[in-house]
Amino acid sequence: MKKLLFIFPFLFACFSLLAEDVTVIKFFRQKKSVGSLTDIIVEVKGSTLILKNSSEVSINVPNDFSQPIEIVAKMGKEVNRYTLRAIPGESYVFEIGFTKDGLISKVQGKELAIDEKLVKREQVADNAQVNVIPGAHGVEFVIEKTDPTENIRQEWLKRGGVIKNQTFTFNGVYFGLDLKDYNAKVTGYGGGFSYCDTWYKLKIPEFKPKLTTWTNISFGWGFDAMIYRYTFNGNFEVATIDMEALNLSYPVFVTLGITVGLGRFIDVANWRGVVLTFKYRPSITFNQVSSEVTTTITSPIYSSETNDYFDVNASVNAQAIGVDFEFSSFSASMSKLAPMPKAKFSLFVLPPVKNTPLFISLGIGISFYNR
Image (cartoon, rainbow, N blue to C red; front, side, top):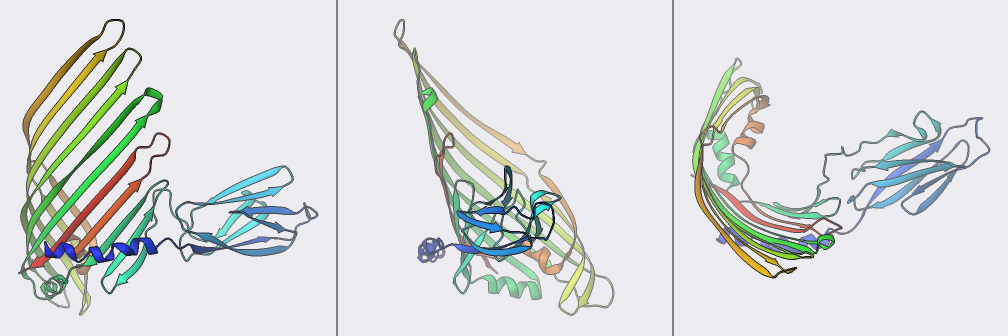
């Protein structure tokens, strides 16, 4: 438990990450005879710019990168819009006027893809950092700190042999949703604990001018203990429904992995080649589900009925097999197979907006190595 305590002094750093950054945007209008006497108005986040024929202007836009920047170009009755998904440190150039894309066309600057998230990082200590991941409505705070046993892992990567990794994880969630249109409410909460032991046996590649191989064998076991409870309360015109449910789940698993690398050294310190990984993770999961549903009829004749449900079962998954094949370096492959040990605190908050539920997720985890 002592290893969990040292991450909490860094929680205060979450509140220091609210300062806004700046995105630099340049607009230019080429000299053209068509529409040369008409000004083009550009609106960016509350600022209004006027571009005449053969002119340019730059603007520093305050940006916390939590949402895209809306750019509006107007010329008479014609209005064009551009949604800029900016990246910190990136500058952007737009051509304004009669372009192939309309009144506004981007000519320089890399943007986030639609499915990408921005991670804003701030260093709070020599080996710790805080990440803020803004979303459309919610935000995630992540604090990570490298565990001192990274020294053991680095020595193992140089010499090979056997090393052991242990991982502890705690997590909890809460959600609540008011369905005002249906006069109903849903709430739920729960959490769990996870533990995993993994042993790695590594044979490092020997430096040779010809093809060399290396192998890594991993094996381990682990378990999860999760409990979740949720309720539903609905008041309808002629009836009310109250439901409570409790779900307990206990997965137990075994892991086995074999990795083989075939390639050559680019120099003394860098190996690259083909890496093949075989993974097998059979598991057995014990489940316990109980629920109680009370239905009350209020009109035309009052009546009430309660039904209970209880079930205990177990399921086995013996077909969890995976195969990976990639061209990679030795260091990159081992970063995936035996990741850096860290202590991690995460908090995700999604406030209730319209039909979106209030959702809060909290996680604490630690991973470390020993011989």
